[in-house]
Every structure is written in structure tokens, then in C-alpha cells.
Image (cartoon, rainbow, N blue to C red):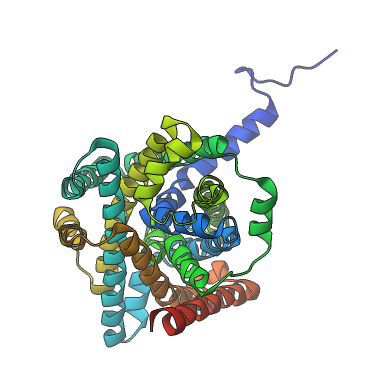
Length: 422
């Protein structure tokens, strides 16, 4: 006689176990989606489009390796917050000399300004391209929308996570559709992914921009804050289990961001470089040329929509990170509306002075690249200390890998500073 192993609800033990795993994972799912949004901001559009149109698929490997670095760095950030109950900025304030803490705060705020500059310019440009608003009107509307979204935090942080995660998935869906329409060539794309090299010196400059647009310094601070008291853990086993779930959260969030960034560069290579349009070096040019080159009006609309979602969502995350940086380093916060107003001002000034958006966007991402080591070095230092981390302390190979990543970033920044900027 056959025995029905289903329970009264009709579920088998296997499906019940699957649901149990998912239900345990869901409370930990979300912080990496918020962090991932910063990895697809308008600065990524600027650097990836210029890299793809100028060099084809050649720099795809830079995007791939930058995203793998991001996975490692964001995992360390989560680990620090979970193990210590403090975020990275608070740890620096508690462990470093006071003058150094103030220096860290100033440079972190400068990085936040560069971040907001890219996000506001990108969202404003999207409003301009899609709806014909002036850049100034677009900037003001961006500020109002992001403030309204941040106001939702008082109704629960989970609601904000759902909103930001939905924006991220909307950007991903838009680029998947554009890639299907653009049909990039598989062989050159695979070669660009697997064979690292730089065609010329400017490619190194763009690589620094891609790295700065992908590994975002302010999100290193933010991610440690999102995990520090999200789910209470009391025992070593609970900490290990929580870290395992957070690691999957990072893989999923950073994986989505990586696919979007690779799609951006591959789309520019397929539509512009392969058609001899190697001079396309701005978001506005891309919007205007996508439809005629792909023979689909939908292509430009999708591009503008993804730019708008990326700009709005990353602007929300940038303001959240700015609050964490200020509270962590100097122990006080300011009202969100005031923070939003202050971070809008540089973008408004740039718009009113008429600076070229593309050049400002790429330059802002290079500034972010210079800010990465300041956050990464103390992160590696703290997560390698057993007295701080307990059973979540880094394994030796993880610390060595983190040091190698920091070394690569510093060498790349040094090259750009020495040979491209001076």
C-alpha cells in the first residue's frame, strides 16, 4: 500500500523544507538590494556607455572584476555590522584618533557630494529627455520625489526596501529588453570578459571611473549600518547562520547590479561601437541614437526610463548613506529635508553654470574611486581582529584577498593621478 507523505495542507516534506528555508531567509533579504542600487547610478551609465562606445567589449572584464570586488567588500561590511553591532563610521570614531576621525568625516562628506552630483544630474537628465523638463526643473523634482520616498521610513523600513528593490528590478528588466533588441555579439563579448588588457592610457582612466561607479564608498558605510541591529542574534550559531543568509543577500543583490552594468557596456558596444559610432560619449547622445540605430522607438524610451529609476533610487540611498556617515563619525544627525537640500546644491550649481553633464559624471566617478581605500582599509583592519569579530572574524585568505583588492585600487588611482590628471 502506498503511503501519502503529504500533510493536511497537501505539501510534501521537501516543499515544506524549501518553504522553511525561504521563510528563514526573507528577514535577512533586502540590505544588499539597497546597496546594489548605488552600483547602478547614473555615473555607471556615463562610464559604461563611454567605455562601450569607445572600446567595444574590451573593458567588460573591468566591470566583471569590479563587481566581484564589490561582493567581497559588501560582505565584509555586513560582517562588521553583524559582529560588532556598530557600523563602519562608528567603529572608526571609537578606534581612531580624533583628528583622523574628523579627516575621515570630511572626505566621506566630499565623496557623498560627488555621489549626489551624479545621481541628481542623471535623474534630471532623464526628466529632460523623457518629458522635456529643464535640467533645473528635473533636479527640483528629483529632490521632492526622493524626500517623499525617504519620508516613508516612518511607516517601516521594509516598505522602503520594497520600493527601492522594485526600482532596481525595473532597471534590470529594462536592460534585459534592450540587450535582446541590441543583440550583442557573443564571441567579442566573451573575449572582453576573459582577456584583461587596456588599449591605451585613457582606458585606464575610464577603468578607474568604472571602479568608482561600481564600488561605492558611501555604501560600504551604509551596508554595515543596515545589518548591525536588523535581526537580533545571541549565540555564535545564530551569528553564523545570519551571516550565511546575509552572504546570499549580497550575492543576489550584487549579482543583479553586475548584470545591469555588464548589459550597459555591452549595449553601448553592440549599438554604437559595432556601427562605427565610437564618438558617442554622453547619455544624451545615447538616448537620441538608440532608437534610429536599433530601428525601435521603444529603445530610447526604455533607456530613459532605466536612467530615471536609477537616478531616483540611488539618490534615496545616497541620502540614507549620508545620514549614517554623519551620525557615525560625529555623533549627530540633521533633518532629512535639510540633508536633501544641502546635497542638491552642488548639482543645481553645476546645472546653472552649464557644465557638460557627461564630463562631470565621469569625473565624479573618478573622485569616488579615490574615496574607496579610505573606507576599505579600516574595514579590512577591523574585520581581521578576533577581539572585535568573535567567531565572524575573517579567515586569513579573506583578509589577504581584501588587501590585494585595496592594493589594486590604490595602484589604479595612483596611475590615473600621475599620468592622466597631472
